Image (cartoon, rainbow, N blue to C red; front, side):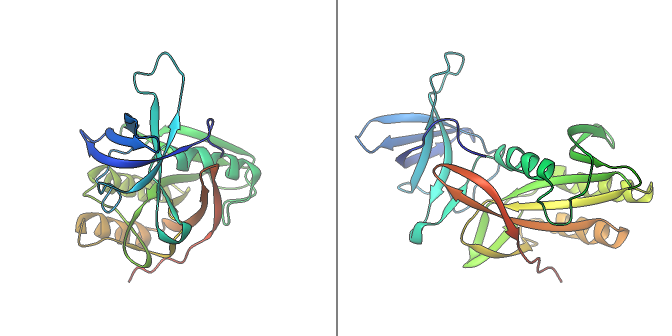
Length: 235
């Protein structure tokens, strides 16, 4: 998935009201960017961080920049736009290149299921059980090389795990897919101290037959691509 407009570097001044970020461009111009991330963004919203913004000239948009990346030492990046995982994964799923999720005839996004929910992707194929795939964007890292989810309490995420387990009970396949939007992480685990209820729901879903897959990403200011699997370390 390539960004529609070339990104420009900036420095973060502050993030506020969840969806707004004041930034300073390299020429000193101060702008306000849209932050497409409702989470806590723990460790990713410190003033002075080098970030990358996507300009736009859409007259329908009030803000002319969107915050897309955080740059770390060593040339690593974290993608902060929570809409990116599904956009990147859709093409990879349709191309059949996501490990463990290839060989399906159709890939349908945003299909209603459960109780007032929408599954991110429903994969179907002749002679195979339907496969329900829920996607979570992973951006938290508190230890070098280790990605964690979630970065805040997520009752919605806990609900999704229960609904995936229900799909298994009905004879379908269900997959919880964690897409790590960090290039500096090689392992994945749950942030159980942040949301113990989610961790308990994960274990219950796993015991019920829900599969867990973690996939990494290749991130540059040009775009985000699905990369290789990342090992899951959950006791």
